[in-house]
Length: 417
Figure 1 (cartoon, one colour):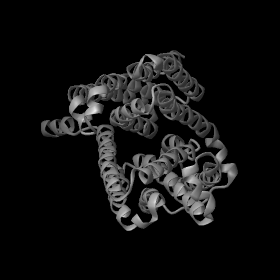
Figure 2 (tube, helix red, strand yellow):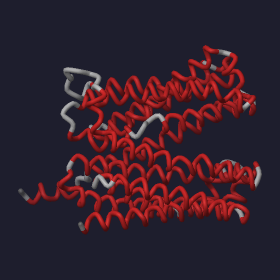
Figure 3 (cartoon, one colour):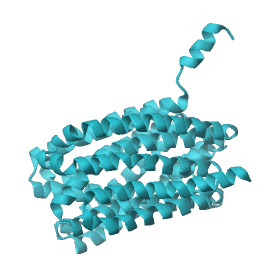
Figure 4 (cartoon, one colour):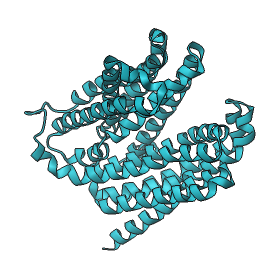
């Protein structure tokens, strides 16, 4: 190899680094278009209508995650070595879509009994069915993200699930303004469903045409353990996200809840950076199992560098960032956002250990560490919420670090065997 070729090899970024940065760019595009969407919504509708739509959209996001059934992580870990990748993807999409349809239908039946503003779902079977279908489409769209990653087609993911979905999300509220709150929800649901259809086409055209599109149940037994562990860890990961806002609004009141919500949304961008690197680590390690240890070390260095830089930027600009939402947020949320940003280091340790254990197929340890994370976050938050929002923010980072410590111990024990 010539000196010139060696220099080019050194200057060329590692594929895992490129994928991580593209995934983070997709998260930034999603955040930007989401901001535009809510600005448009606020211009077109009253706060009451926006509030109802926000409840439906939040429910759809949660239902989409629960509908994954662990198959999102399973595909990343198992697809690189699969002999029938197209069949695996098609079957997973069908299963997740069916789960999303059932979850959406269940929510449409129960929600009107619990929340009076959502009673219109119970009065209209058409709207209830449309809600269930759009939840299914949203769930299928969420599943396509890791598949694009495994196929090294992250630029296509950015184009479809980032730019296309974001553009539709911003434009559809204008076309569906006459449908009120359901129109706002449908704008998001339709954008994600259209993106799911385009993503499915883009993915399947990259894979060899299979002899059989849908796999028999017996063929899926091999992924049951991996999917079950992935589903358990995802569910445990979601619980604090659902419980913390309820805890804050119950103890600290609506104003404090709004401050915490805004700060947490800003900090979510840092979590998106961590998740981008972690998922790229899992995909690269699954693609090359013999280099899993080296890939993990590279991911650790990448996390340390990028998270440190991002945390410094957020902390330094926190007052300016929060001032965009209003002076009250800048006044009351500066310390909260700073603590949440510092907690990203705990998130980084947690996700790195989680992906390393998945690569090593230490599935029981992944469930244990996420259970510790969930209990630690909620326990610390319950104790500290009376003292203020800063203590709730600290509970988030410390709980993540506690679960990550358990994961690191499991990684060390697995390496010593």
